[in-house]
Image (cartoon, rainbow over all chains, first blue to last red; front, side, top):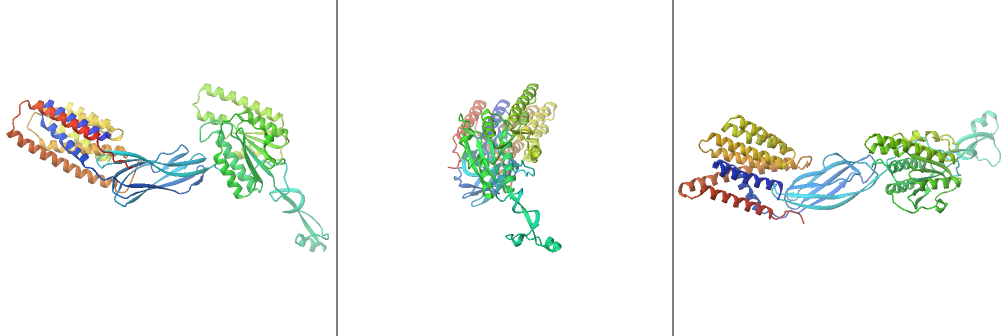
Length: 420
Length: 169
């Protein structure tokens, strides 16, 4: 029985009672149309036949982007009043339109229902459970059902452009954006010297040769690239979605990967969640997508396993690579892995998004929370100083600030352990 | 639709004031109207409470007036009551929801037909009852009426509860 049917019965009963008690027939007459109206329920309608289909403007988006969802409802038979509701997962936020709709459909009619959602958090978002309630026109009867029309949305981490990046100490002979002091093949002009047999004609500097009446050639600086390995701590996270330490770490990793790949460097990814999961360093657009795909599924996975860095193959973690470890430094296992890497002579930078502002934002401001955060800050500083004493460069990053500001100090050639 | 419901609620609480204007009726009417408006916005049970109070107001007005029968007014009030309940419930359900093309038009058409049919049905039944009351004399009339009303309500409630669901397979 719907609430309306119950209401009709209640008011009908009340009217009859008042009529009997007061002895005024008008009160019975008032509720007569109500009770006559109930006869509509007796009339049975044919079982309606309808279906729902989804279409999205894009099924691969970045965080913060909007997607228009179009739900098409079609009916093979007339539908008096159909109520549809599609609940949204926490990763999506409704921007325009409604996730609930009422439709009246004639036989063979098709209606489109649109709403727009904003993607708040990266991940694979599966939607498509539509709850339907079929009302008769009077609202006295209703039937409920749920439909599964699954559709998936891939929300990739937001990529902020980075102009200043940690400069690798070691590069390798391969075409890249780092101009080496050595001369060789490249685009960046270096010295001009006298022509010697064996020089290529295309390197002849005609302007200098004509002026000095001798052949001169231009020498070019070698252009090199580097291997960059992003090591992501997925052991634990703090804060509330969509701004946990893991979320901001993943956004930082995506931004760094994009920026280094744009410089023609080879970028690899190691996810440390107890055991290691990795992607070999490589370059190119396909590899960029591979990295984003890996970041999409990166999540905290509880594990007692704690693997050694020595188990990571050399092709995944090349000795000359710049390793950027992104971690809130909440788990000792990750710190041990970082110390191990530093001991093996890797060019290492620890980028540490601070969990304190994120936790502070997620909790109510009270004196005890304030005190706890201050103590936590002191503990984090002590931990970072311990790592710095071991010669590891630690960059502390407040996620409320742009990543580029935190990385600014690293764009110059680094001395070990000096960046704060 | 909310506007239509509010207008109907206003008519429901205003009609008793036309019958017997008094402070008590006005106060009850104001409370009933407030409850009806809240119910239209938020909850059907609150709307029912408002309507129950409005019926009480109507009963009080009739008791104070103590004049001849006003059956046409009662039928019109009943039709207004039916449409108020339907529109109020529909407006509350359709709040914060998208409405497809033709939903409002078809509902308005349906309510117009419903009002006309239920009003005509009530008038026919009233006329039949009036004709029958002239020829048939029953002992214990109030008791029979009360028992009949109770039986009718229970039958309606059972009929509604046992109705077939319209759910899609």
